[in-house]
Structures are given as structure tokens and as C-alpha cells.
Length: 464
Image (tube, rainbow, N blue to C red; front, side):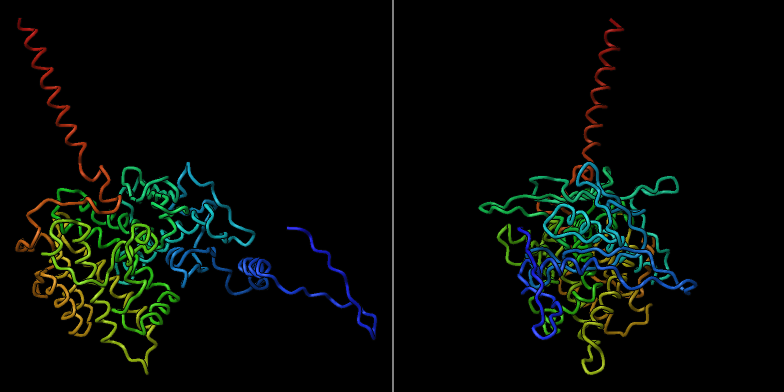
């Protein structure tokens, strides 16, 4: 950009210099907008002030993904200590990968979109917000607020490593327990020229983080030997994590209300999962649509389709609870939807935790949701919403007096697809990762068979 020479003007009457203010160009306006994001906040506090400035960093992230242009980016605040990377005690910047991003002079991470530094910040922020979302949900129910990763113990507090550009030319993303990492792919869709980065999708990052969170709570659920519905719960939890995280952000909640006119069954970005990725595959509603009417019989044992049965039921329950509580003349719709999403998030999380550690089905979780809603003192229609929405999808919901302790529960009646093995072919990278198929056990069996054969040969040679 060439330098501009500003010539001072003079008032004709007084001959005093007058500042020349140029007409702002589009690039100048964009520059000023970016500069305002990093302006120093306020004046220093006087000595002896009662409170000190809270720790935390401002970051810039995508509200959904680059294709949802109506929403774009948002500036958000991450409380707590965030160091260069970015990283904190629970989440680390994956290395080798994108070089560590340093905070600016104000301790903030404000970077221009469509850069790898922005991708590192955006991905970290969404993972951090997801972990905080569920820690708050646990704390509000009176449980300990710590949400461990699967490998954490008294002697291992290793963080989860995040690789925004971890899978070049791969149309997928995954969570790996062995690698203790989230890895996101990027690819150029067929017939296109621009690259799609899965890490730029709010939904995909939240989804994969959801897998990591649930693996810390139910480490045996990811194994393929579980019934199909257990796999469906894992995939559904990932999609619901993206929905609950969006509902925890007030500007997104207001956008949902405005977009749907407070009818959650109207077309909305909230129900569409990973819009940009879906468009790259030629799908109009993203990878999945949470506002669906799928039943167990229609889904069969394909885990990707099966997950939408559970996700769809919970989305319908959200819409029912919101419509039941709605009082436009007394309550702000956005504030009500925020509170409804917050409650349902905690309800689903607690119900999942109450389900068996192995072989959990939708009936286990739905029954727990019914009983928990009752013990929470919620109106009777809340329990009826849960029963109805799961029943129409052919999920057998037990009476709300049924004990929640898994070891005391009778085995649920078989449901469609339960007797078949999991079909994970259309699932995300997490569900297709080899470590959860226990293929190493098959290799061990082959090694043991080889060792036994060699031992027999040695004994035969010794006896000859």
C-alpha cells in the first residue's frame, strides 16, 4: 500500500491549521474494525481498589463456520489463565503443528480469520468452552466440578492436545485416547478450489470434544463390542454437545429466536450440524439434522443413523420444554431458551452418567431422564415430554420409579437393532479409529497362536 501524504489545511479567517479527515475507504474501515478489537480496556484501577482485574483472555472465534455468513465471528472472553499456544492446564496446543500463538499486549488472542493462527485460537476456545460447559453442568447438580480426561489420575494430569491442522487432505476429524489428542482434517472438495478446514466448524470441534468428555466418564462405551445403541449414544452426545454449547452463548440464542420466530421446528442453524462440511458433500442440512423424526426401526444398526434417533428425541424435548414455559409478555424468549438449554444439558449429562458402564441403551438414558426430571421438581409435563418423544421413536421408557443404579436394573427388553453388531462405516473419525475396535486383541491372538506353534516345534525337535 503506498503512503498517503496529508497536507494541512488552514481556516481562511483565522489561518489556524485544520485537520484533514480523509473519506474512509473499505480497507480503512476494515483496519479500524480490527484495531478496535484490541483497544486497551478502561483506565488502570486506583491503588487500594477492592477487586483486582479478573484473569482471562479475549479471543475471536467462528460462531458456526465460515459458510454461515449470517453469524460470522464473535469476540468472547475465556476466564482463567491462558498462555501462549494457546494452552491452559487442561488443553494444549498440539506440536508439531501450528506454531504457538502468543497473546497481544493485553493478553488477548485476536487474529484475522482464515489464518492458521486464528484456527489454533478458535479450536482451543471451543474445546475450552465445551469442557467448561460440562463442568458447570456437574457443579450445578452438586457433583464435583472436575471433568477428567480418560487418562487422568492422581499421577497423570496430562492435558488434551489439540491439532487444528492435524490431518492434511483428510475429510474427517477424530478424538484419540491413545494419542491423547483431537485431530482435525482439511481437504479440497471435488470440483472446488478452496480448502475446507474442519477445525473452523464450531459444530465439529464441539462434537469431537464431546467424544473426549464422554470417554472420560464412560471409558468402555467407545469399544465396538457394545450394542449399536451405545455407539449411538456416543455420536449423539457429540451432536448434542454442539447444540448445548451454541445455546450457552447468548448471541447465538438470540439469533435462533430471530431466525425461527421462536419456533424451534422452523429451519435453523441450531439443528443443522457442520453446514460447511455438509455443503462440501452436497447435503443441504449439514452432516446431520437434529430436527428429525427417525425411529429405531428406520435406523437399524448403523451408528451414524442410530445417533440421530436419540439426538432428534432430545431436540424435540428441548422444543417442547421451551414452548411449555414460553410467556412472551413476561419472559424474554432468548433468556428462556438459554435457561432451557442449560437445564436440558445437565439433565442429559446426569442421565448418561446414571446409565450402565457397559451396554447402555437409549431406554437406560431416557428412563433416567424421566426420574431425574421428577426429582428435580420439574412440572409433570417435563416427564411426559421425555416419555412421548422417545416412545414415538420406539424406545421403551420405563416407569419413573425405576431404580437408577445400573447394577440393580433388570435387563431392558431387546430393541430393534440391538442384537446386531455396530455398523460404524458412516460415523466420524473417532468412532472409526482402530483403537476402539480392539483390533490389537486380534493381533495378540495371532501372536499367541504363533508362539504356541513355535513351542510345539521346539518340543518336537527336542524329542527327536
